[in-house]
Image 1 (cartoon, rainbow, N blue to C red):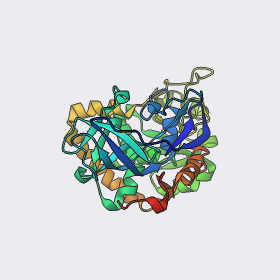
Image 2: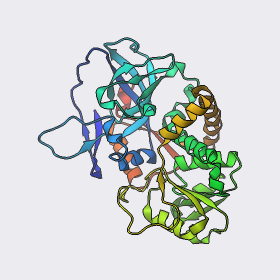
Image 3: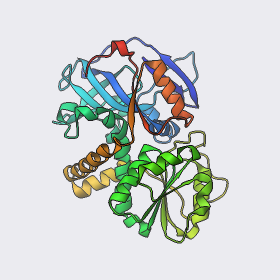
Image 4: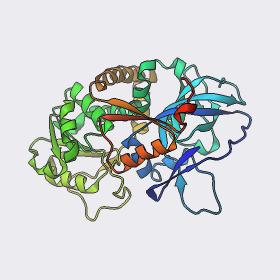
Length: 372
């Protein structure tokens, strides 16, 4: 069973129940247990064509329907339930990139003690970070009591960690201020948390009026302003801007206000899906041209410089501190079955989800769930 969206009209959704495909030699069937669903997944949809997110889990072609249906990737846990290859034993659990579905067929390859890579033909040439699956029983960051944290927050924190690492790697472009849009988004919260920990001068969070109190209560932003209050922040100190909202109007406003004080502008996400991510601006923005940030590029650079083990240790330590901190403000809620998952998706799409709620989902109805 799959939850699919119209790639050209993201608020058009359907649930499809197709017969299970027969496995070929070397393939394994993964039962999708649970996955996290957040504004990050809306970003995957917004930038799906630009960054090939739609290509990971393609929808079978239907000659009778010209609609460009797609499956939005999520992060979560699965279990091997059938195999026709070596290395993936039935019953073994994995963590990684999954579709909003009840199952996924993979072609396991490049096995090591910690996991494997899906070497299916349609996933060749894509970023390794998205094709890699970790064995749960071999993951040093795994804790049974933190599985909701892991599926919902770890991928977002992964992005936040690499964003912060990129800024630190570039000496924050000489800036003493860090501005973050969509300050209630968990990626933005992660960046703010890490920036504060390493002593970034001033962290400014931009948010909607409805989320202002929540964002202020987090304690990781030195100043919180709504989008229509951008001009109230003193632009005297050099700043870097990290755009998680993906809203050109907000970005234009920040650029115009900061002017020559804006040292660097980064675009990470698109939580405001109703703004065309690919549309060219009507006129050049003031200051530096926003640069799109692709986390795997920085990750590959730092892995080469530091070595994968040291980089993993640094991220593991940062993650442990962050995961413990979020328990003070985040509650997890399950969404069981296609209707419940669709409801969460629509709330996120409409920017109506409670930022203090973490949604952990399954396409399987609750009565059919197996114990983890």
